[in-house]
Image 1 (cartoon, rainbow, N blue to C red):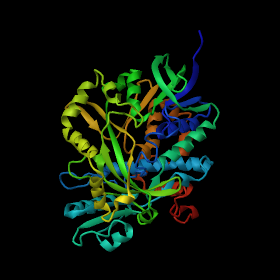
Image 2: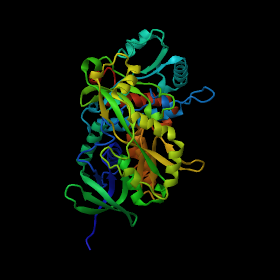
Image 3: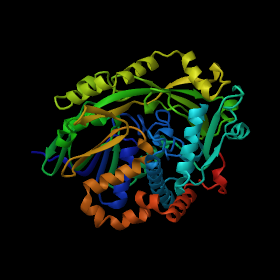
Image 4: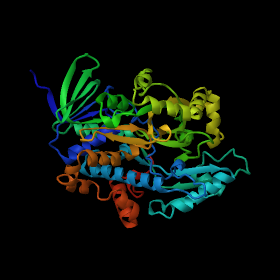
Length: 501
């Protein structure tokens, strides 16, 4: 009987998650034999593609849904601070690789872009002022500025101020050291770096059709989508980082920890502007509040995007609904994901989220004129001919069991792993890409606990001089590490490369 080919690690999906984990594992143990398999014919073809995600460099600086207001009026800053420190951990990894010469110029994937929050009306202004006062007490947000002065706002966001009613109450905050990240470019640089290492391969046009326990690891059946041929490989560890397709693969594995999870697919659309005259008047990411009754995924924002050296503007997102789990997926993805173990949570979520379903249907039925109306709340003088509709990537929000409600819809990401650490899957969406490195570090500590504490510990300390908890609590450490990362990533304002792209 022929022996299957054996590798140490198989990663399914060639997006930012798998690319990050594969490169990180190879840094920790250069002797590992690693294979990445991807259904599409290139890396970063789904959620990591720059036009399929917001590319914010989510750092909690401007996203208002990360700072909810409690019933007593206080602002909860915990999530914003945590996401900010997670993004700083991502920057440490990229900076380490940049110093090693892995990337060439970091400016091919990360660009300095100010992050602004903007609100309207008495209630919005009162909230933003409270948020500013709560956040600026923390060292991660000490550089945040606040204004209700319209002349100042016209300097900060010149595209957005003309054409507004003179008596409109407005307020804005600004953090100058925000970034725009092209996660597609970053992913492909990581994959290229990985493929140049010994015993590491990235294989495209490959579909995983079988996943079964074998000894202490897994047997993975991989089908070539072009030739139809299949091969089996044995892997000690499997990572399912295939975006929306991770849920069906997790179900295929049959691990106990994956039972009961369901997926709720949400599609998105953006308005995109490439007119250089318009684009040059808005060099910022400006986030506002979601309309009353809208889900957190619908927070509107007008973003500067820098993709392959060209600057554009994106406005949205406009949500949509399809039963596909991937942009290039099948309309049967959702129905085929229903199992005895997840049907109760899925039905409970359907019952409790009728408002969300109605919202998604109303979004799908919007006309271009209605979409432009939303844009004109941000940019009153927007002209229809400058904007076109772009279809974004699919997001599969997590449905999980809940003892009280039967099932809940969760916005965010969830790492699911087998008890023995031989398999892990990443489910969910935002803030996803920006906090990938933190999530993959959690995976390493969960699935390779002994190695993380012993033979990999020194290398982890070298790559990550400060983790999230230390960054949250130690102001001097935070400033020093952030400054080092910024310098390595050419984000320092006095660096010749750091002028706006």
